[in-house]
Amino acid sequence: MKNNTSPTNPLGLKNIHHVEFWVGNAKQAAFFYRHAFGFSQLAYSGLETGNRETSSYLLQQSKARILLTTPLNSNSPINDHLVKHGDGIRDIAFHVEDTDAAFEEAVRRGAFVAQEPRDITDEHGTVRHAAVKTYGDTIHSLISYKDYRGAFLPGFQPKEVAGKDVGIVRVDHIVGNVELGKMNYWCDYYAQVFGFERFISFDDKDISTEYSALMSIVMSDNSHSIKFPLNEPATGKRKSQIEEYLDFYGGPGAQHVALLCKDILATVRNLRDNGVEFLTVPDSYYEMLPERVGKIDEDAALIRNLGILVDRDEEGYLLQLFTKPVEDRPTLFFEIIQRHGSRGFGKGNFRALFESIEAEQAKRGNL
Image 1 (cartoon, rainbow, N blue to C red):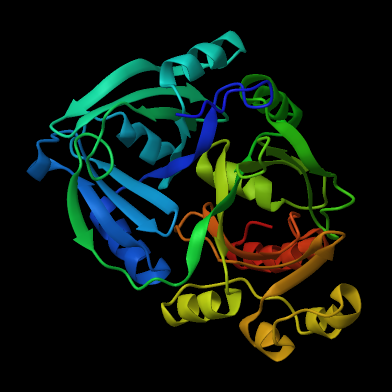
Image 2 (cartoon, rainbow, N blue to C red):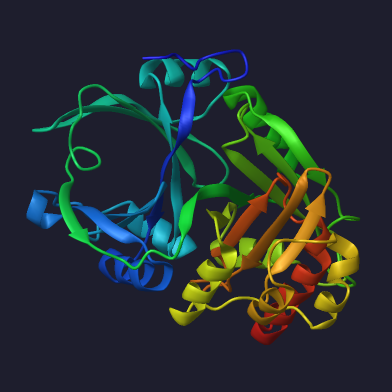
């Protein structure tokens, strides 16, 4: 096996293994993500597999994997998480070369321990698992395989329910919201512990409207395949979307997951047909679009009709669209993104996007 450990990848990170959501009802959440976002269910752990503590459903679409977990009794610590945060992301898990080496190096570099290394075994073999903490109650599991040949992880059994694929390829990035004054702290944590670099920075001049603002720094691994923008609120006339999130989530957490696709027109059309609700921007945005971004391959009329945002930088362009929150609390949402060379995050769309978010905040009485 090739060892990816290096000064720029000190923990030997390979990729995002999966993203685990702690939810109040995993069976219903799995139904939602199958029918709304087109994920297929591949594996299950619960009472029928001998798990008396939790029920978990693994969903996958191409390389994007989400795990939905719910407690089965009132004594579970997951209940405290649900009371405080509602449904949300608990674990952004990494596949690593060697869990013990990754954990030891992470702790040596200042990581906060969530779970010491341990073997997890079933009849299909063994997986090595550990975890370290990050912002809020979020963790990063460190997972390596010994000889495992099962459906997902030990304790899971195949339980396949096909979803109608909408064209999602993988997780592009995951955005975290942190408290005022803590953005640089957590950026330094990712740099020191994981060897991540500051990829792009945005200040309140880049991301602001008449009413609210935020600041953001994008942290990336050395391959730019794992990217974590970190946001903190900035002073404005009214409550920013970050403050609204922190209020309703009960502290820092993962704000949204960006899902990469190859054909955003087809993907967004399918998602809309499935009932997924997206933010909208005014028609004036599209009147200025040709002058701002130049020639693109996609049909401009279809982009306008579907409400897709476009931005260009020196490397190319991207197309993106954001869902409304997928929970009753205005917390977690998703981004659908397609890249044509651009490795950016849609800086030219920030004002239009934030005005759209503010319109939704006003409807909720939270602006």
